[in-house]
Image 1: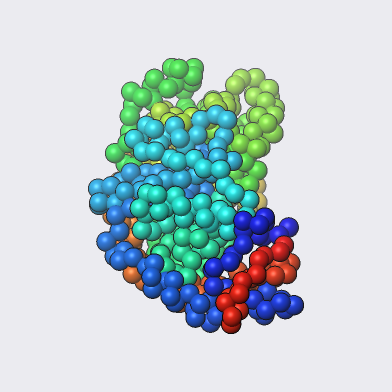
Image 2: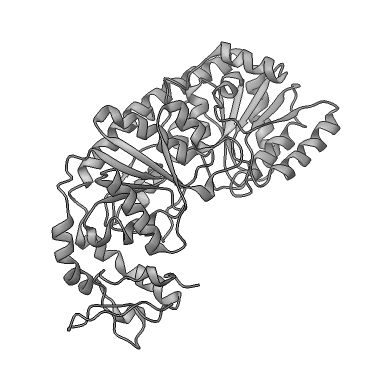
Amino acid sequence: MALFKGENDSVEGWGLPAVHGQSVASRVCPEDAILAGKRAAAMSRRATDDIERVLVHLNSLELGGTQINALDLAVEVRRHGIESILVGARETLPAGPSLLDIAARRGITVEVYDPEASILARGRQLTTLAEQHGAELLHVYGSWGGGARPTYWGFARFGRRPWIQTVYEMEVSPKIKRHMPLIVGTGYLVDELERRPGRTILISPPVDTDADRPDPAAGAAFRAAHGLHGDLLMIVSRLDADMKSLPIGLAIEAMGTLTADATLAIVGTGDDAARLKDAAALVNARLGREAVRFLGPLADPRPAYAAADIVLGMGSSAARGLAFGKPLVVQGQAGWSALFDEDSAAELARSSYWSPLSVANPVERLRAIIDPVLADTEGRARLGAFGRGFALERFGLTLMAAKLAGFYREVAGTYGLRQWAADLPPELAILARKGVNSIPRHSRSHSRSGVTA
């Protein structure tokens, strides 16, 4: 499949040289781009040290941790004189509750666009959106979602304007560019990327600890509305096969082993929901009661957190559980689990409440964690209070937004042509792998040729 499609996807005028009959990688080099781009970069670079407007590209319009974090930060950085314009691809918009519902409640608009098929055309789309809104910087969220490469080839081309990327996944893909400024959400990733040439900082996935806080009245109302009684475990998550469904399935299975007659309520939906519901039906039939309940996706899951006696989860969902003052059982993607307490807090926070580890007898491990917490009402209160205090100190939205605003202004004057060109070789390798046979260039006579693909 060719990278460039259609006659309107010519890179004519981009200053990238080509020599017919040679491979892409041999025809274009960073030095060529530097020489060809100096004039464009010098003419188009803005004095952006005082950033006032940022175009934020969302990885998805589904209800998910990274995009909710992006929205919360966009609202909060207004306090620092920075206006964020959020955009997301229509193809990621789900049929039910979506990020647009949360945005409306927060009083911020998300502009939905229909992305073009090719990298260059999408790059022009994002550049046009940025210029229409007067954005001086472009912020791409997620290592997936189609924002990074179009930004590199469009808005940030030749390093004329700065861009940054946030990766809240648990690892940084080798495909992530190495020389642009990068935000990660876990402490161990900062250490792993110590030798990365581009600036890399930690901004923990934030939680609005003013909105996400203990609320007994909302919790009681949620229980009454859904007919939930007694000890209540809560999972708020995507029900996707990738990373999520294995630990959720283990939690469902563990319900059949608990000493107490507790209920597990699951909020969310996803591509593995049907299989998980089948597993829950088997557990419920074996117990002769509805021990596992599926409540569907909620645009506002705060009452669900407020209703819980114990929260099970990973990543942003786990952090929100702490903010609500709930005991937290952290679940990794492969079966590992741990109780969040004074002894484990620092390490669990460093790994963003997640683990890749598998363990022997994961269901028994969960039961051994949950049973004592359910049996100790006073202990639950102590764990909840400790978690709430930890949340206020470590990842409150106010603190993280202040850090983001400072980073925007710091990197505005540090990303330029040299950094852009340093990330060019992997792009050329992509072109070569995709079999692009001709890239136009300015010849010495300044004649131009089109793109064939």
